[in-house]
Image (cartoon, rainbow, N blue to C red; front, top):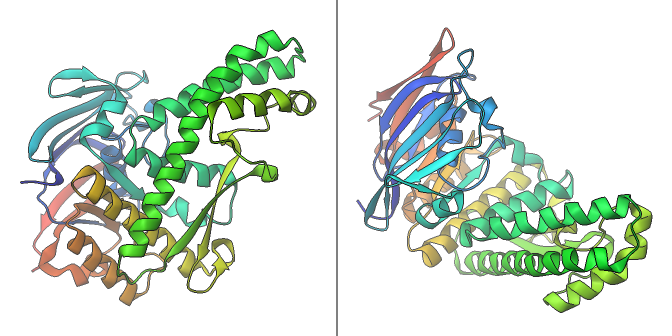
Length: 371
């Protein structure tokens, strides 16, 4: 098996799954069953094969099965670029999660070097009409899929900014207190900004080259108050120093990549994404996830694993069929959830079907022959 696929997945005391083991192949996987059965929990577990807090951004404690709260473990056999990797990630009693790759302790960033995972979940449907924070998070997830080191740059920047903000709140005015922090922020911040711009360029190129049933999204990176984000480290150091009087009044840092926003336009109609219909907004999100997947296929060498939770929502029958065709054409292992098998009828024998049920708080899974 080549490309990027999960061959086997095991969960132990993860959310509603006391013990689960399933096997998969290159085909998309259709997980269906009633709401609350534990379908999204499986997708969340898979999302932990990549850096970060997973698709729900939950704490490690919240992921533990209750009432035991013994801790949890996710294990996977992952085929990545013709190599088989054994990945384990776990948490004991709410502690920070640990990672092991091929039997050796590893960082979360190392996960991004062997696996690329993208997801689309219902909470993202309001992305274009809610606050900039969610769009930054969406952009950073896409950026992280191209550059695993983006997470480290972001964390470094945010840590230094928090320390600078404490100085601002305490009304510290001595420039010497700020210089080292601002140099650190500028070094990490320009890397964050550069990574984001590179990711947007890759997405734009991917959309331009593709023939797809989904609308093209014209993307634009902007910043609050129309403050221009410097591209060079020295320029950002100067901008932070210049902004200190304004920042002291506000009690927080007002310039930098943490003030970025991602704007999108439905290109064919020249309509801002926030003004589009619910169905159009969903189609734009699907378009970006597919563009991200196509671009990764070129840069990483294999299509990413896709996690599509309740993906059929707000997609009409034609677009749903088009999505399945594009997934299969891309060759991506997509894990998709829905309440009924009929939502995946257009996939036919191209997919593996798993029915998820729940009894007395315990989830169970069964493979169904839908041929």
